[in-house]
Image (cartoon, rainbow, N blue to C red; front, side):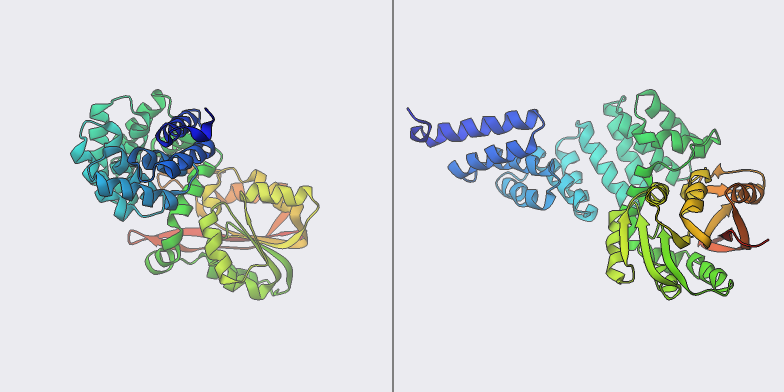
Amino acid sequence: MADHDADPFDRARERFNAGLAALQAGDAAQAEQALRQSLALLPGRPSTQLNLAVALLRQDRAAEALPLLDAVLADAPDDVDALGHRGAALNRLQQPEQAAPVFQRLVQLAPQRPEAWFHLAQTLQMLGHAEPALAAYERCLALRPDHAAACSQRGTALRELGRVDEAAAAFERALALGDDDGGLNAYYLAALRGGAAPPRSPPAYVQGLFDDYAGDFERHLVDELDYHAPAALQRALLGLGRSDFAEGLDLGCGTGLCAPLLRPLAGRLQGVDLSAAMLRAAAARGLYDELHQADVVQHLQALAAAGRQADLLVAADVLIYLGDLAPLFAAAARVLAPGGVLAFSVEIAAPEQPFVLQPSLRYAHGEAALRRLAAAHGLQPRHEERGLLRVEQAQPVVGQYWVLQRGAPA
């Protein structure tokens, strides 16, 4: 009998099984196709809707997955698999407030599932509820002591609560279980234990931090942290007596807080940032001629390799995520046109220390070490001052503002 003559239920089952096989093989697109075919033959089948939602989630299409999961839960409100996937979809859509009660319901229904507690903990952590998140991580680990990711995230919750020794022990346990988390656990340990620091913050940490932070970034910096760096750097640049920079580049531009201050100084203004969410906010300002999603050092290196030049480079509160500044200074010296300037802010370490990773997870740099590095790359100081960077937990964070010039007169 030809396939089109087969019983619709049998054809639907065959397509459903093909979809499951594709999911298990890691081919979400093929799974989606087969499961949609099955659902067309047998509409409303909960198991098909659930697995189609999984296929969509694996393709980062959470918004399309949600209606399918809602349909399953309308018929079976206590379906633990559907609840878990619905919570995951809401988190991917940056809706942790809606995801939290979903996961809370899940742990009520399936208290012996370690992953249920893990996802609840992650969601609470996204909401800034460190104490309840910590309790949920500990429930997860009580059920599965070798859950490396839970050990790592428990360390993060403990660090946020100021329990430094316990946090460090959690990160050590995660590393022992084989979870380096893209270098994050070693990075956290170096900050907490004061050991040998990596040369820079892991890019995944920086990108994730600012993707999550983008929606509240400006309000938090301006209203709560009393952020000074953009205005201080603009004053330093104006002090040079120049406002005719042909090509400016805002390194780590974020949401574009520097753009209104740099735009009058530069004929063309580009921005570069690792975070796509930040760049979307920067684009909305309409003040940049170009925006690039890239690592700032790699972007400068690419410009240098292509023979591109600029005469203004600005890095406001960016070098706190770079320890070893030699690669950035080397690339900047190649990109800067003769007489071009590099303006930046740093947090302050002991004068001779090239860099120190602080418990805040930010790097600080020593003044004498910066002078040597600048001289080694033909960059001469034109401006240097100590000043307020921001206010954190009612305490001023004092840093340094620098302007270096390529080929400046002595």
